[in-house]
Image (tube, rainbow, N blue to C red; front, side, top):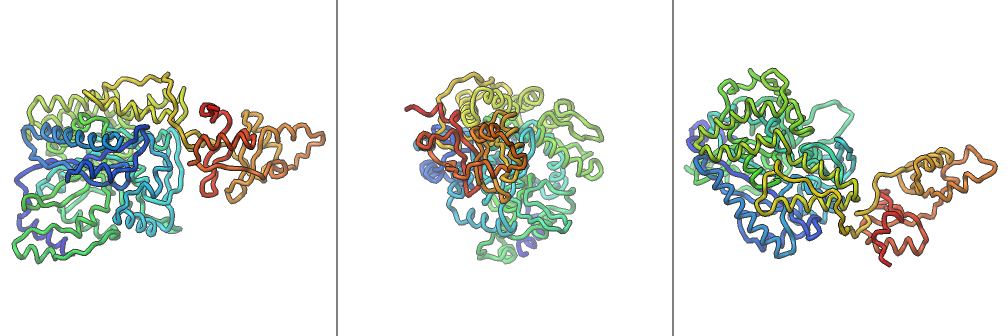
Length: 601
């Protein structure tokens, strides 16, 4: 509580730095192997880079760059861009020393279930503690239920799904006297801004939201437990439920009241004592707690050059697909923040918060194809940007002293993207095209390689990226069963009628059907041979169950079994298929058709 009182005292005394505006950013990026799969050596790469701007992330295939804050004035975006490019060049060299590459993307397409295991978690006590506490608060495993063009429904035993999210976090220093109006404005523009920045439509080979990170992050670190009681619980990842009021201090007070403390550490100094001595406290306890509340627009306190300041952190923008795209997003957001018309100083008189929240969710789901609720009207995103928001952002940047050439260079990218191709559009078009000729794993690898190649050299902004060759012939990089197994399965229960099960096999041309019991465990296999034998029976018993004709002697393989070993086993046993089982649960199936391309004997 001393941190809250100290912040309140500094605000009342006018100690908060209000006469300077600075911008800053954090760049998260992925490390990939020479086969475009998630790496596992972030610690080694970080040691090779040896630069304090870099730090760990939750997963061992991610790192983060903390850029230096710069004053919002002429040349600031150029300065930020140059530093970011220089640091990424250093990251590239560090990764290359370990036969790795770096990639800017919202969700790395090649992340699979294997890379979500705890052995891919960065071995730091903080992350392990976070994982344990989050599971304890939930009272069990995490659940992911995402629905877009495809669906993903899965239980998971760690917070590692959160590590799938890679972002470009943008910071803007805000005067304490204008903080609430600015914060509410940041909330109001979140939907329109996100709609043209989407870059994360794929997860585990499923096509979900235009910006899947929004739903994934919320569910991946959701500490709420379900119960029979109908009660509202605030998610730790949220855009909020209402407009903020009061002062910046009230935002921090509300977060202390709403959220349990899940991270603690020994704090030696009392903030009020530090303040009474004429020094500026760092409010370590408050900042630690604030760091475990993942608001898409987060109020932040910091100390720079011995002066305390307040800022808003924009957390919803994905990483990539190029540095230029990210800088365009940055300029667009900052321009809108500084170009806020006076009529929006009090958002509660202009817009229902639920409309702002609905805009944000729609943008995450359907990107620039969304229709936004704005000024009492329903407006398509391209029209809203062209007629209102881009001119507003231009005016805001111009007022901040940004040179016209830089404004036009960056905002024209956002405008072209809104009328043409966003990163999520490019990813979806190419993935669908690649899947016509390639298996899922090979399509994801090819897509990831395509992202990397487009990020090299001149690195045109994504609205100018060409389509990939969808008829490409590649040598598959698959080497584990999980890379080739089919997860879209026809499954029958042992108590199903045999006649129905065999008819389904015949109708669908299926040669192998796994059989589960009522507990959901694999208990048998129904094959084409069984079906043919059953059909030939003279006295067909319509009451026969699947359990009566299936084979119970089922040999299985694990998802991480080498494909070559699976081939050897199938040949030895003369099997046409093998179920794939992990932790007693059926997760897929491989057939002769799947392994033929890998059989070189």
